Length: 628
Image 1: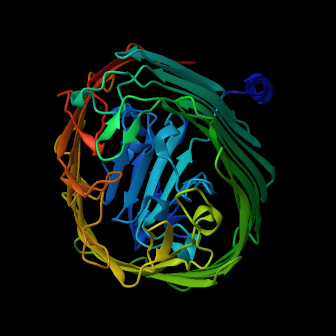
Image 2: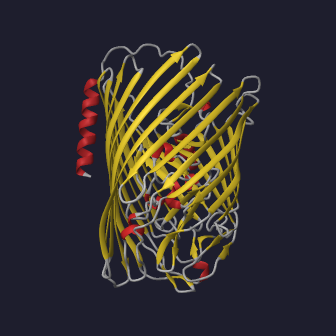
Image 3: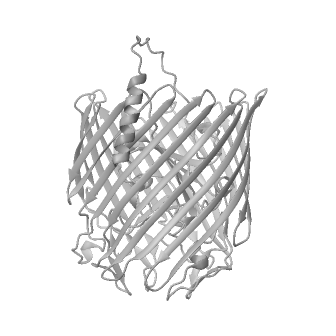
């Protein structure tokens, strides 16, 4: 924290000293820029040109909903299923289009943050939303762009960047169950430098991780401290350097699961920390027609499982990656072209230590990517991508993807379609880990996938109503599953298909409505329904601003249909469906001060996303935010 404060102070002083005392001219009339999607291709792409199914949540929506955990924002997205073990701080898995949690690639500002020691999965439990600018969810196999882990899709969390004169913001809030959260940030920019730095802390006494309505009364608390920073330096007109970093320290209390009877009050805590960092340089040549980017990242996950009076089990996962990308932009008549070549080298390391076994292993991978984007008459767009991965320890893989979008000018309809293949490499634990109840299998093959979707986006009454509909079909083969005391590649295909529906509307001034619905059907190669994937899920959100925009009220509803689960040493069980209702509101006292309040799970629904582990009960929070 002392380093954070020092950096913030230096950045502020540097920015203030660069501010000129000259008269500020009359501002020009604002120009509305076309929405840009960062994740759908290897280069930033206008939303209308994207042929893949992608959903974006903006910072404005996050603030209206008073989202504090990124996983809660994902619940409202089509095609996405969230499962949390108990209340805040419990293991939180996110699945896209019925794929497994470790078949979803997660990025933070372009950094791959899946945990090599945690089954190559990202645990969303500890990702707070304080500095998030937007969240993009790209659905369907994307390994041609990003390599392993992107079978179901990609979630890219993009943080804010400093802009304009020095400014700061602090907030504090408190509520039921001993919940307290507070934090702040300072940001700004000059002609050459932009910066943002801040932190946030959360603590709560929480609820019992084992369902309270099943007779468990011991509260399981959670503590999270997060610091973050983002710095950019425009060294010359065509050379820019960027550095981004994030560190998390947390302690999560939990319960255990008994053989055959489910969860019960017990000490099963996790003490951990995470860090993510990336440095990047970008060089633009020939008036921006040739762009070159080189970067390096380092991410780490370290945590101890504290199980009653037993010695802790320690896990450490590290990822190191170096990447290079070259983009060439050209135009010939009414055609636009983008040629991209990229190369990256990645090393994953995992270490475990316990009283009964340990291992320390690593894997390396080198990938080569080629992509071509074509735009014709500002109406028809096609993208093709191919990637080849050279893998250490198992077979290499080649994946590809093609997307298209067509704009019907007369109606504004956007027709889109995509087809892609994906790959999921075996995890380090599956290949080398060993315990008294598990034997590794070094002969595993990567899981493979192929998937396609087709859909349309239809604006009505201008953009006052927009409807999105997508049908998707996905197949996964060589699925890695537990068999006896080891894991094997299962023969046959897992088959998943479904429909995603989205709607946004502004029926009257200052009233915004958003809704989504997903129908999904997924079975493994033996025809057994996949667990923790609800067949039906939906969300509805209404936000109304009044008093000249100084006040707003927000109503959010999330529906999660019935789903199967496979408890420890029990047959498959069906989890009940549930509805979560959230009510939020805020009022700006003046341009610098806002007060707000919210009630999560307003109806105090008793629900389980994992068998016998209860969700969060009714929670009321009130707070104040001050900017300067």
